Length: 411
Image 1 (tube, one colour):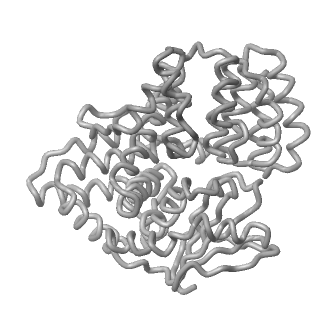
Image 2 (cartoon, rainbow, N blue to C red; image 1 turned 120 degrees about the vertical axis):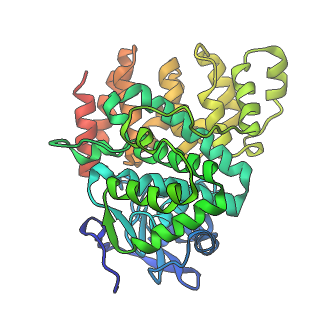
């Protein structure tokens, strides 16, 4: 390739791989056993590239291919230029997890084309990418779908704000003598995206898009610091348009500013109401008519997250009998379901959870699950975590193995 890239984006892959084209300048590499499933799952790849170009300009990397790695790959995706690495947990069978593809594609502009100068500025990569990802999803699948993703993201951000040290809830981080990975939190990704959404709402989408296009053009194949972006934003958007905006509060202060754009989804409101009232006779009657295919993955995630905190194992078993969450094959749904099961002592899912933990090494899933098992009030959960990890650690990537080793030592 002729384009310059920073060293962290260099990657090499070797394996028993076959290729299937998904468009004029895109396709998928995978092991023969996964190739057809992957090609089906990511059939909209060419449309995504076209949508991204309509929003923020020409794709400058010539070719855009995907590579399906083994389940041990510790991440959902990695945005190596021209060849995004992916985890097979994205193969849901219904194309419901393609936002990860939109995210990695968006990195072709934010991150790969314009790169953060240091890991303290990582929000310039990830905040822009989450924002751009959502714009691609909106263009292809509609406003409703985009709003659903935004609401779920904001819920995740709220949880992270409660968990993180207050100084780590700033966009501009202080990582002196710290592991750079500590900056890869929902703050960089989601607070960064909501900063940009709030800017968009303030100045209007057309004006904001013109600014972002210019930003990508002016800093193409360059790195920049947060301070440089702040100055650029002030000169080329805010002062230029006579707009007052609390940029420094968003970037250098903790938490979420009061002017953060508000998002909601009627579809999520409805499914959350069903979840919260699951034990009531009236709602139970409605619920028994529902099939899993009636709602999207993201709606079911929201449903699971809003089940009553005191829901019983018996009630969880009844839900499972109807909707088969524990073995549905959708990694996002199973992950959320297993978290609830651990919390509520629903041990019937353990064989399915063991299979899940033994098969996938994706940190997004296995870290919270092991953490929940270790923190459980049930001694049998501790024993289960230790046994499964000892059996499975040989299948995990060294990054994942080290992380889970530290988690299981907390007991």
